[in-house]
Image (tube, rainbow, N blue to C red; front, side, top):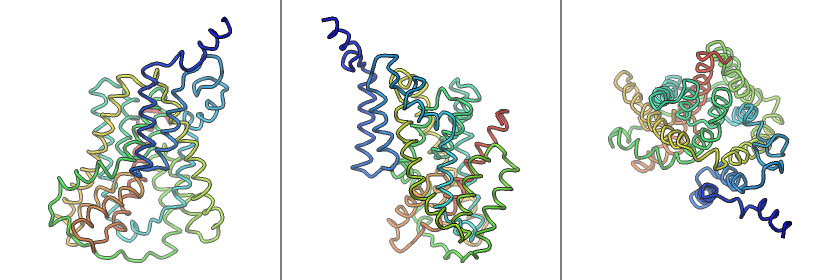
Amino acid sequence: MEILLSFFQVNAFGTMTWGNVIMLLVGGAFIYLAITKDYEPLLLVPIGFGILVGNIPFAQGMRLGVYEEGSVLSILYKGVSQGWYPPLIFLGLGAMTDFSSMLSNPKLILLGAAAQIGIFVTLIGSLYLGFTMDEAAAIGIIGGADGPTAIFLSSMLAPHLLGAIAVAAYSYMALVPVIQPPIIKLLTSRRERLIRMAPSKPVSKRVRILFPIIAFIATALVAPGSIPLLGTLFFGNLLKESGVTDRLANTARTAFIDIVTILLGFTVGTSTDASRFLKVDSVKIFALGAFSFAIATAGGVLFAKVMNLLCKEKINPIIGAAGVSAVPDSARVCQMVGAREDPQNFLIMHAMAPNVAGVIGSAVAAGVLLAALGHL
């Protein structure tokens, strides 16, 4: 009987809480949305299953959980808590990214910058809700819709909020097709959504090679805190554009980024133990994340409308929504919204310009916040 009692005490059924049950349902919902709705399955399936793994209770001291020093999950989670995985994700992202659309029409960079307003508006809102400056900065970066950047900054400024911030950031990245279209339609008229933009101009190979070098130096000088992210992003892009490192570029944008994405998503999910995750602050973070994402989307769309007042060559304001960093989902959403009005209006290449600019913009914003708060 003593052996049976001891087994029951360490068995999951004996220590399961309602919080664990709720989080298991959340994990199941993530997997359901990924498989049936195709909402960022490469992110939601690892995170969702990680949530399941992280919420099966066990007796303390068994060295199984992500928060138990020396456990396998704890070692893998150091890539998140120490900020190792985000730069590696950016390396693969750089090897996948074509900056030609942005270079052929540089004024569209402004749309990527305008969308970062969500970060700073949310920072102010977080302070109002009682978060510290460090915590508010980490929460605000969710507005950039850039999961790796959110993880990188929160690991530096607010590691105790890392799980909630990471899950919120990736959740809203996955829900781009749900959140953005209503905001776009609310802020634009049908006439504006029907605007056709001139085809992008070709960009020479020399310019494509020089861009990652010059852009890195310029952004690093402005925001040294962004060096780990932008250094790997532009390095990966140089591997792609140089033409002499195809093997390295191909590895970076395929197997390498896939491996890191699996590890990052799964370990982020395992960090959502109910006793640590189900708190009032987590609810606030999710609410602020939705608010920041909406503000970022609106900021990009409205700034495009302002640019149309000043520019002879009109911009379809739909593409302003792509100023957030959710690459390439935001650009695809812009194409989808535009195609509903005019199936022959191809906006995706134009939308990729503010989309990739948003990636750079959110990383620069993170670097500025690190510098401003003295965490370099």
